[in-house]
Image (cartoon, rainbow, N blue to C red):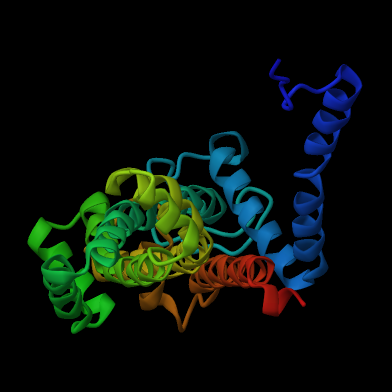
Length: 304
């Protein structure tokens, strides 16, 4: 008579299930504890959380319309009870425009980095996994893109696409794609030769399953860190393109277009440029601090 050695008693099964339920919790708490131990990373996370909340609640927190409400009796006025941060050259409320500007900056970061991530990561993984002629072609294209400074490339692409906010963000995203291709390619080249990938290949797993099931999940940590830093750069790029007139429309409450308006009044009303400049500085600082914190969590050397 053959006995089934895989049978377990109800008590043993319950104990095993309890242990498995407790095992994933420890790494999560350790990760959260490591992140919270980095005070600068917590500050960065707080800044980004505040940006998201302000962007979502802008219609509720704003006191005026950011474009059409114009107080011609208080043009270039300083802070007051009616206008907490003052008004611009058309009498529009700066506080309201700053709130709505956070929405444009957040959209810029999400669109540009999301496009670069969704294009660059699959291309980089395929290139690093297959190598050969595929890798050679991909890397030559990447080298050609990286031969141009990112802002110059974004300017050229935005001008070719016809300007406008979304076209500008597509241009910025294409400029960021090469960095994600290189990073994903390097991860794929390393992971494709590891033991568990070789074992999956030996039992008949196809290439698509290996890339999706094994290489992509184990490449996400550095890619997420890169995406966090790229979001800050995307906000700077959007502000620069809007400042030059290739991003958001001049009447839109973009922080870059607000700086463009403020440049003509630096001698008389310097605070007009202070608010959008300070906002860009804080948000980019927040993304950089958050990226440093995430990198410290995922890097065992830094976490020690």
